[in-house]
Amino acid sequence: MNTTSKSAELYERARRVMPGGNSRTTVFRRPHPFYAVHGAGCRITDVDGHVRIDATGNFTSLIHGYGNQKVLRAARLQLESGTCFCMPTESEIELSELLCERLTTVEQLRYTNSGTEAVMNAIKAARAYTGRAKFAKCEGAYHGTYDPAETSQDSCPSNWGAPTQPSSVATAVGTPHGVLDDVVVLPFNNTEVSEIILRANASQIAAVLVDALPNRVGLVPATPEYLRMLRQVTRELGALLILDEVITFRLGYHGAQGLFGIDPDLTTLGKLIGGGFPIGAVGGRRDVMAVFDPSRGTPAVPHGGTFSANPMSMAAGIATLQDLPPAAYARLEALGAQLDAGVREVFLRHRQKGQLTGLGSLRRIHFTNAPLTDYRSVVAAPSVANFANRLFDNGVIIAQNGLMALSTAMTETDVAEIVSAIDHTLAAENGK
Ligand code: PMP
Image (cartoon, rainbow, N blue to C red; front, side, top):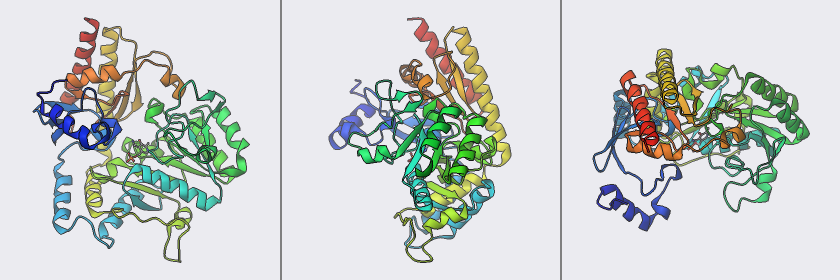
């Protein structure tokens, strides 16, 4: 470890007061993390003065990058008036109006402080609405850290069971068996098998939770047949369909549901809708959302939250959405296509087995030419973690699993710089 750097020094201090010196597993790095001091556009400066391109946009949340002037202005204005109150503010109505206008399946919504809580409340709403205990999710999909939602997000060949009957695998040690018993795990994109599993649990399932472009399942899109089956079968069984758009809302003006033509009962949101501040939201059909309604006595699902709908997140979220017209998505799409073409060309030139998955502003690198269709096919591919670490040293930050999220702050030159860093990193590797 370079103990002379300020980051190394900070990490030594951090280790004394935080387990492993860490408060967020996703940003842990060996031998130590680098500590950020400033962000501008798509770049972060660390405490030692190194500047790197953040090609994750704080893990997909900063669709306008760092320091967007409109977002800053809105946040500053709110800051002067108060950061949180024991009263609602008009801003929560305004953000809801903007979201309901974009998401036609969302008639009403409520805010939380994270995507995790949004998913948790969606599952609770589905249980309360249907009077059923179980819910189904796809193997490998990440939906935050609520016990049932994190089931089988990290399963492996030794515990994941038969392909036609994926096991419910605990993520956190000590997860009660009762939790796992109430989670039905579906093989992503396997329409036939998933339908059989759902029908076998027919009268017990409150909801199916699905992400149309799940990052941890390889950022492989759900097939139209798969989504059609989920919609049809949930309706038939009296269960709800919950679409997790915490990440995918950035795919288009009408989110993934517009892009894929899905009609969920509930939608979960987070990340970009807070403009860089903590947020989550659950929204959907008015009759389902009524489970949260306190105006007629104790609601079926009580939901508070000291910072829920706090005006800082609302103000930054409103400014973010107002600066996201349909044309912004077209531009992000073009940058995504440039990245895709650039990386493919680099892979070919270096004879590197690999492919990019994803859509629009979301892309993920894999080091395999084998078809990627579900979680198991993605786990079988070689890890890109070491490559991501060397790319970091070459000035570009991507997630350890190869995920990238482009922002409106990026230009074609920035994307070319990302491609060039990938090129140099592979060249250095091949030269070894
Ligand atoms: N759902 C999805 C699809 C996510 O990607 C995430 C976070 N990466 C979450 C839920 C949880 O969101 P948060 O980190 O805000 O709790």
